[in-house]
Image (cartoon, rainbow, N blue to C red):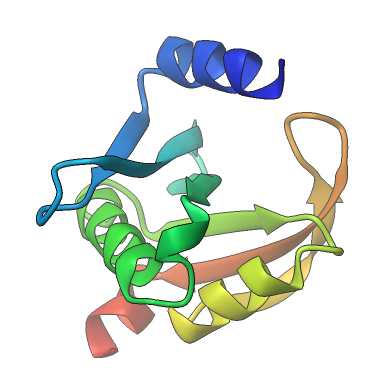
Length: 125
């Protein structure tokens, strides 16, 4: 089962977070930090999912904003790796101010588009 592996890997990463709807108290999604690179002063934010009932609202942006606030206490760059077919996620990180900078393989060996956001750009937004 996909989610079984997803959660096992997320928990073992020690960088997983859950999103809870304050109104209902229900779990509505998750995301995580990955690939911290102190030499490049960067960390990846990804593996995000939200319940379909929470798509299109402010939830994803709020979750990513909080994660970036935390990340920029320690690194200069946040990276998002997104598979080319996932246009919805590409548009989402572009709304956050992330810039498309190229492509590379993700942790699963899939070709992914690289989006980056620097601390200075985040602070200006």
